[in-house]
Image (cartoon, rainbow, N blue to C red):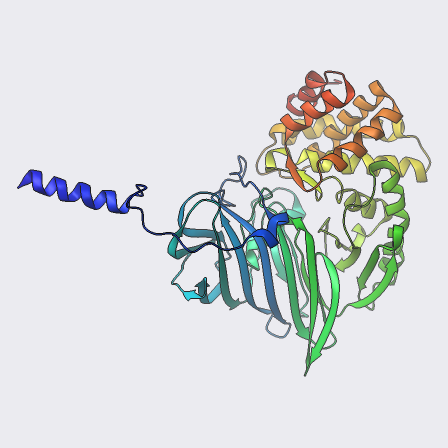
Length: 469
């Protein structure tokens, strides 16, 4: 009897555990070719492992969003095209606990998800084999709440979608927080294509990342449409709704530019209109602007290099900061960090170009400005940790800006201006739409320059004290 029971148990386990001959049939194949540019190789984050899911690769997000200022409430229909990285029986996404699920379908079939804290787990009607795709549709509503991050940097204490008493809303989310307004694989290693529509009352405007496609009106509402045909990391997405006025402009080679400001934003609009000149300056240093459109939107606070639509508020709307966020479109948006361990790849380059632009337009030389960074860098490194191994509660502290910028300056001094700026242009052009890390950066610099800079790079990124102290 015992032998028979064991035999039956073994047979049952074989039937359910995935042997080739007896595995449950997988879902029918789905054509993923139209979304090829959204293909990524997601990884788990070593700094913030609770966010993102390396077993899935979201290729495309279709977001139909409605914002109601009077109730500060959001409705959404998110259509995700998902590729399985490995065999899956369920899909886990990051999604804010404050939002309520109305319906979920997979391939047109209704399923019952589990929504626990900020995780949304969706069962699959049939398993997905590795590299198979599925279309997931999630309808939801609610009053979004920002995420309390535990970060020491004041403007990062709250992440994700926030709203004000007047009904205006804005969402900025680095290193994570997109999950507060749509279901997402919230990690920089999973970039995707986007189509976003934001419906608001007439007199309001909904602004997102990507290229502005125009608006349509129906009754008392207006819908604003946006499209990203180049892959976007979730932290570079944007949602903002306010009584914006649209202003149009053109950049180099006729690149369309839009500015979105409120009635009281005259000064901010004057600063934003300097974007074409800043783009031309950056193109001389880093090569052609890597996206089909650009823009600036005035938000209520902080600043962010949201893709194709820089978001800046208050005193952040200054030319050098606009330049900094614009520089990220080459260094961070087009070529970004694969994990948050290497956020210095974003901030070091953007800080260095900010310093060079300042030296080109204000009294002082690049050496003067870098000397100022050297004094402050020593203290930041001690407080926040070295930029290659920063304290996890000090995300995007000044240490990941100053020290890598100084490192780049040291490389520049050794190889000269001509070779240095040729290197920065080549880095972006050769690695467009990819995620990189320290190992790939170091190997590439060594190969490109013919000089072994490994020790210099490691010292600036890892030392507990400044390499110049």
